[in-house]
Amino acid sequence: MSARKVVRIQPGAKSVILGVTGSIAAYKSAELVSLLVKQGHEVFVVMTHDATEFIAPLTLQTLSKNPVTTSFFDEKENWRPGHIELADRANLLLIAPATANIIAELAHGLAGHPLAAIALATRAPILLEIARG
Image (cartoon, rainbow, N blue to C red; front, side):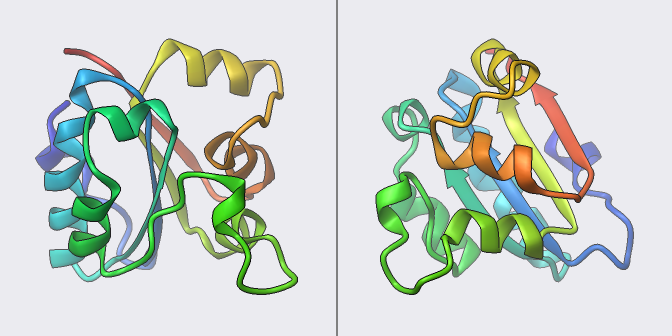
């Protein structure tokens, strides 16, 4: 994954949801968040459970300056589900790294975790960066 090539998005696109899945390439998401924030984008990170085994949510929360979603149970603050709020807010959903598992879940319409639910609910463009070690 070459983060410097991926982060050049349209000037009007300001709200980026970064989905991080369980791959050794997940460590590169910290640089990606940093580059997007430096370009003036608002970044919200959504991690699968497996992704948290490769990089700590606190790292991405600190870099993005926004809470990191890792579970549906993170969504206790208001009546509106947080994953739907993120899906509506997104100008771009970037899933990097995108594992074979998340690609299969999206292809079959499975929404067992917030990242898949956001991907199925958003009207924003979805960009997948295939996981490579």
